[in-house]
Length: 113
Picture 1 (cartoon, rainbow, N blue to C red):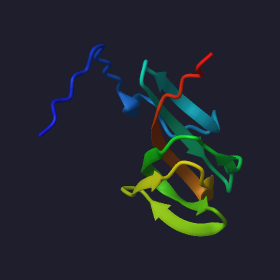
Picture 2 (cartoon, helix red, strand yellow):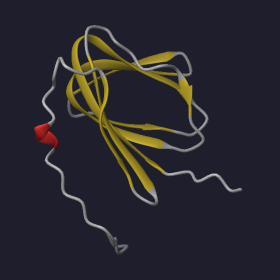
Picture 3 (tube, rainbow, N blue to C red):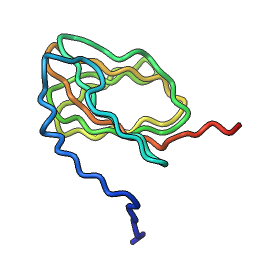
Picture 4 (cartoon, rainbow, N blue to C red):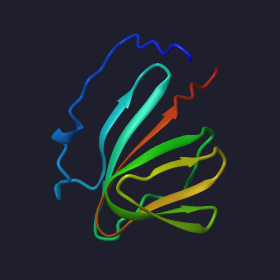
């Protein structure tokens, strides 16, 4: 088993982010030197813009149900689902009418200048 070392531990009570009607979109955003972690909330059929990323993305659905569209194909998901989106795939996530909350994580890409 590989050893996993955390250099700067961070503990956040994500239960402290209620599925609130007060904000649609990113409700928590954490960046380390190597990773990006975000929690998003969508409601009432709201959706993310179609995007293509240069890195792989993983995620977990925390609340509700939605649809993940990958290269034009729809995949229904609900609370408890894990998803993996390979780099260079067009993706969009949307709520199916009600509250839809999910986390995504990805390696941080640093532009080389």
